[in-house]
Structure formats: structure tokens, C-alpha cells
Image (cartoon, rainbow, N blue to C red; front, side, top):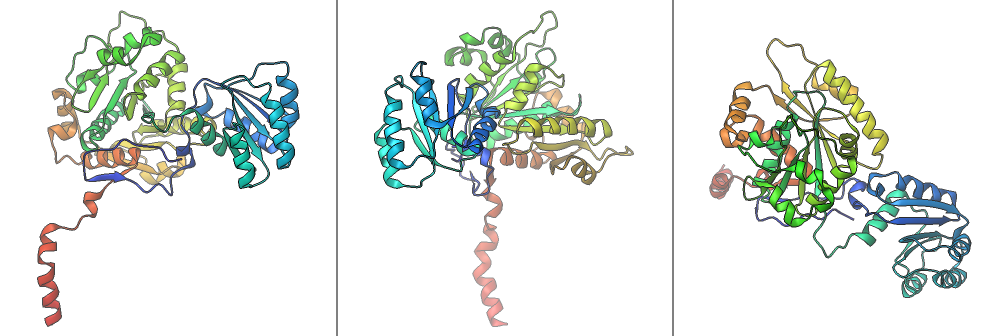
Length: 431
């Protein structure tokens, strides 16, 4: 299943062709449900276990049992059924239907059943649907097939899609991750004409308010203090609107308060935000904590900003190694080299960075202290200050890559050349 995106008014941008998209785009986060699987084949059981470790199922409670449908019938004869039952069975059609009828006698109202069988039979599929089976998969079914199936069951395609979350983190303090986050998010909002929210999680030292020349009274700290109270109305009051399509969840930036909140509180706040806008950009602080790690791992896309030196290379590798271990079904993070090509400074080359991290650099942004510092002091984005700044094109490229859009303006023929093309063609014929 391809991830849905909201329609946009701007005619120059369109969705990229998704044929080469990563399989992780097929599934969306699963709500807090209970899932119990009863398997005949250990390979299916392994696939369910693998899916249970994925970030999309982090809220679900998953248990796996062997024994197939017979074990399920015996189990539910004495126990209540969960939200979802996955039955993996090697039985042929007739016997499978008989056993499912017996299982149905113990199923509570609201329980969904997914069957994984061995026979690609249309008639069997129709009979299963008549009996209320939610979906039928033909083995072998891998973890992504299962996650896509469950996602389709619990994410209503008729409602607005859940927004995408982009996490921005610096490999080291002071490398400009917040600047990258803010400029890329602003570019998304201005040129895609779609709503974007920036969540500033650096509660004591965040710069989102300064960068957008805003001084909000309330912000993300109030949401984190009582996340269970956060709804659409309260969200509107806590967000600060910076433009038609861009809002910020500003940090309080005070030192006389202790900000002790849980990873669950952070997730609840981000979940409410992503239900209201297509794109949420999380500006993560450099400090490492349980909640920052959780938000990083749970994000849909990750952008790592690094400067071209040894400490940044080491830290970036540590982050990437963590993500490889915890996000096996996701695309690789995006890497941006910022403040590059400083005169007389010894730097690690782009090629060396890529070889050490086994990751292509998405963008290299040259050191330009004058332009960036003036924009920061003015409370402007770079393009608002100077539309000819070199880094602007890089911000556009990053925004388009993250949102999987492409700028079709680059593909349009030059209008002046198009007008004289017939004349040039005639001259060629005369020669």
C-alpha cells in the first residue's frame, strides 16, 4: 500500500513514481490492540515475531503460539478473544472452513480474524469473507505482508491519512540540525502548500521561536504536562501559527522548571499532531534520553545533520548502527553534511563519510556564516532573507526527497526556446 498524501494546490509539484518505493511505505502505525497468532509453520511464526518488533506495532501486544487453528479453538474455549486473531493453517479448504466455524462460536464481538493458508483459491477466499474473515493471505507471508494487512484493517482508507513524522537530529551539538529542520519544514509548507507542524523538543534551549520571530506564551511543554488532555481544540490553542501552512510547537526556553516527562507522553503529543497535519517535523535536542531515542526510532523518516569532522563521523555512525538494529524494515536515514568547506580547516571528505557510514550523503551545505547568522538574527528563513543563497536549492532538494515529490518545473522546456523552435527547424532544413 502506498502512503497517501494530501492533494496540493501548487501545480509545479507532483508525487514521485512509487514503483521503487521502500516496502516500509506500505504499512502505517498500528493502534494499541492485542494480537494473538496460532501457527502451523515456524516460518510464519518467525514472521509474526519479526513484525512484532517493528516500530509500527510497538503499541500492540503480540503473542505467538504453535498448533494452528486447533490450538486456537482449544484456547478460546476458555479464554476471551483479542482484537485480532491470526490463524496460520495448512488445512485444505473444506476442513479449514469447518474449523473456522467452530472457532467463530468462541469469538467475541469485534474480534477480527486473518487467515494464512496454503491455497490460492478464489472460491475459498469468497467463502472465508462470507464467514466474516477479515483477510486471507497465501503463505509464505513475510513480516511486511502481515504489517500491511493489519494496517489496512485498522487504518480507515476513507479518512484522512495519518501524517508523516520527520525526526531531525544532530550528530553533535552545534552542527545546525535545528536550522536544517526549520528551513526544510518551511520549504515544505511554502512550496508544497501543505500544512506542516514543527515540534521543538529542546525545551530549555530551543530556537524555533527565535528562528520564526515568535514569542508564544504556551507551547509543547503544556501539552507534555498533560498529554491525555490534548485534543484538536487544545492543540489549536497551543500551536503558534507562523504562516498559512506552518505552525510551531514552541519550547518554553526557561531554566527555572524541570522538564521530566515520559516517552509515552511524547508519543501521545506527536500522535495528536500527526492526526491534524500531513507533515510533522520533530526538532530533537542533541542530549540523549529514553524519550528522544523512542521518538527517533518511531519516526517515519530520519535526518541526521553532521559537520565534516571526526567526532561527527563517530557519532553519526553510532546513530546509524542503532537505527539499523531497531528499524530493519525501514529506509536508511538521510545524512546532511552542514557547514562544509570552511577555509583552512581540515575536513573529512564526502566520499570518506559515505564509505565509513555506508550511506550516501543527501546534501552538502557549504559554510556561509554571514547569510545564516543574519537570517537567524532577523527571525527569518534563509529564502526569506536572500532568495539567491546557495543553500536554498539544497533545502528544496531535501524537502522534495523527504516528501517524495518532484519539481516538474525542471522538466518543462524553456518557453523562449519553444517559441523559436519551428524557426530553428526550418533553418536546419534549408542547410
